[in-house]
Figure (cartoon, rainbow, N blue to C red):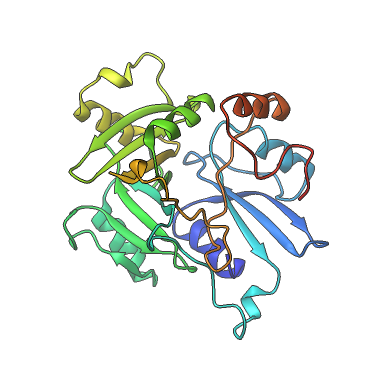
Length: 286
């Protein structure tokens, strides 16, 4: 993010998120902010940046949105043009999302406080959902949650969307990391796969064999976020096709997703056995 003074209030004031921890690295000139949706009425009394907050952050069953701030970007209008928000040709990152009871009312409320939109609920082919812009231009989808969800939060952080080349390989990868495909939806030229971590999964449900209407309903009732994988048909057959991952020069913005594990070394051994390499090994460099 370019300016935490703008982006942090965007997510805390407009979307009800809470900053649960920060990690500051002045020697490397960057700072990390971790935000999450807490259940309505739950107070957070820890001070971000303290050991107690670190302990809470690295043991949560939920999911945090990690925002990275590189010192000075908010003041650099000459050489820094801003971060790449994704959604251009071959970009992997798409958007994050929040669920709410009434998309139309929520968007009206956001617009009144100055939030701008890529798409409003009644625009485009897909009615009833919207895409807002955050201060850095990242897309934030606004989605209607299922009726009778028992979620009292006005908004809850509900989704991160990535595009994948080959869903067979990607789904197998994330299943090893403990995720479950809780819904899949196929269209003429693309497919969507929604994966949830164990804290979001009802172990009594056979997600692979329930009707889509039921899968859709259960997805919209979840409090914690899911990972949405978008597959544009045919990319898996093109040996030369590759998505940008958001860390390339000129396209930096989205960085990564993360998983908490008890033993990083053992987890990496499991991933290595699948034939995948690493950007950084546990004992590797920065």
